[in-house]
Amino acid sequence: WYPLSESSTSPERSKEEKRKRQAFFEQTRWEELESLLVDAGLLRKAGGMLSSPRRRETVGSSAASGTGSPSPRGRSSADMSHDIDRTLAMLVLTAIHDIMKVGSLCPVVEEGRGPWCGYEVGDKVGDHDAALGYVLEYMPEA
Image (tube, rainbow, N blue to C red; front, side):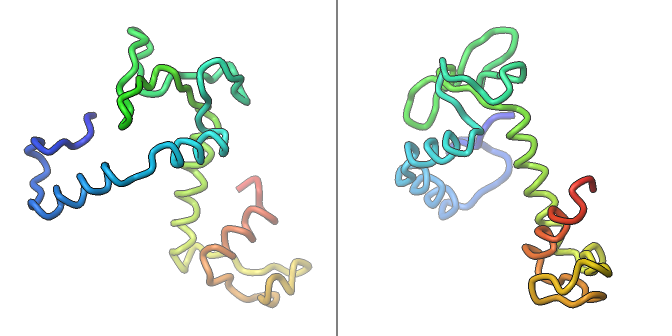
């Protein structure tokens, strides 16, 4: 997998899309985005301990070569690492959050658990954010 560049031929993109992508690239405050990922425990600067050291992997590197890829700021990503378990958990949480938008999969407030956040026993938790909260609170093993 390679990121799209201005010269990428697939998928086809309009000049306007390319212009918007370039503007995003140039105007994004990459240090702040990096800081957000570090604060969330998804990324660590080299030399920092990860929450699960056994799962440490260098961002943008090949396990065999140990070479890093350049970041948008031109710095090698080899000086960053990520926590695989935390990253996987965030991806799973994101997927489940979107799944909760499917009405037939939303939970129903069970006897002994209602009222809950304005929902009565027997009500389907229709808001996808609240539905995710209900599942995490009452069905963490799901």
